[in-house]
Length: 470
Image (tube, rainbow, N blue to C red; front, side, top):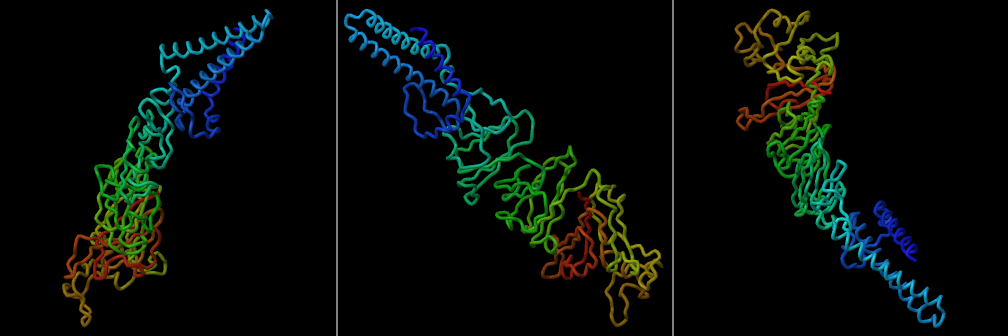
């Protein structure tokens, strides 16, 4: 009889072991309301340890019920045996075995709880074994979904924990409303390995690992982070910035991977479409791993570029600026300014030139305009008198008409991967230049600059930016 009950206990133990290693068995049951078992907590959805503990208790109660039934059967046998000694003995043995089995079951639970309650109340280690993102209630962990409503998380587990020894920081978007709706307010947290963030006071969340790129900040900057809601990383040009950042952008956050020479930058524009002229900002770049820069321009578009800082030679052969349209055509007599790859390399693939401080080279150009420039006549910087066809500040009316790109810029040859920004200052109602910038950017050849509105009407070209890109 004892042997039979040992077999029963062995079967129950194997069943318990099977349940402890197969969460899918419990998921397949799809039970949402488990009966209460005194002394054992109900299973928590997605939490394997509570399932194991619950079913351990359930099997203990089943074993107790089986012993009681066996005891009752033995008692009936004893009553019905009458004067049959063999049946009397069998009934007594069954009753004894049932009592023994019940004592063993109760003793096992009592002893295990006395030695260590964790032996019957199974829990995971204090830290998960694998790197990743988890929901936690402190001592227990469950794998975290990448986004969702906080109300769907198991009660008590509303803390997001990032387990790793080394790796990219984690960005966590926290929304006041459910469904990732930012209209009720949102913010973004950045946590590193071993860090956590509470989700309790929010309606929904999402997370992802931080990567290189340009992040838009809705509320400006707070140190190297965005204040308030932040976009995901942008790595390509945005001809139309998405809501809610369109027209409301207050900061640009740049994340670089300096170890792998990945640098990003941005030029923001007030007009949709980066090929249109309009108010804009100077290029925003950084040599740091992370930086955040506040902006005051109402941005509706943004040039996003990969700055080729460490190897600008690989971007191409530089650029050529001409005072005539299609200046690179052999039939066109045009002055030229060369921005060679060697020049660009000296400034780490990024430089700003004053449009007045660089002069066209008219060597071997045989034209009337070029003749004055080649003879060393000064730049024509006075007011032009159409009657005398002379400049007021030039004594003999002889001057170099197209000395600099500010005087005339006809075309641009871009020989590789570069972004060129032509900048001027916006004038106020009285015609005085303000500190607001007007610009247009180009990444491919410009045959005729007159076809583009790269400076505001009545303004002058002030600066030329050249940035080597990947």
